[in-house]
Length: 228
Image 1 (tube, one colour):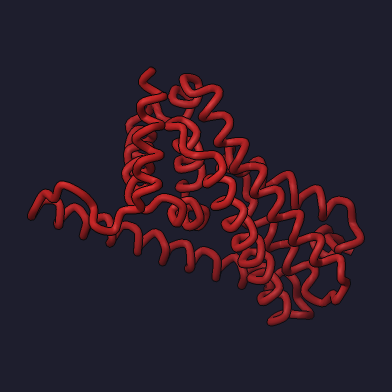
Image 2: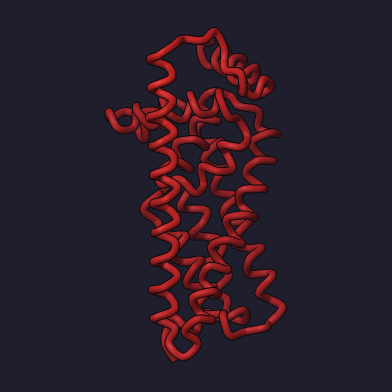
């Protein structure tokens, strides 16, 4: 039996992977949490064990804990977080993008950023740094964690079902699909950013018509707290 096929709902290793890797991925983006969750989906594709529900729940829990750990790091250890994650030119650009996007989109961005390469860490840390409402943050990250867990796990099961007799082929198919989807999301983000820049260059408006006012007010209060 290979390591891949041993990742079943009755294995303690499966639950450890389901919780620990999605949590660590929040502060260490190099951790392949999505790959691990997809792998769990592929490995359990042929199983109807009801504990699969528990496995997906653990994935969502790990993702939720990781997001809120990032928030707390930004809130409690702001100077260190700024030096560690945003001191480089690339980090500064990520923070600027995250703050502007938060001001415009608020909670929807916190949900969607999980699917943007590099966006999760930047947004969740910035929420802590600027003092974004923790209650609203927890609500958004709870939704994001569930959506992401279902998406990643069942994307893996899709590949596993397509190649029931070859789990490695199923894994490659699922990972390939995830890369295509991630690339499409990133391309959409860049196109939207370019259009926004062209609009801003053409005219300067006093306010954003579609802005989420509660989120904007919360961000303004957070900036005041940070300055104090």
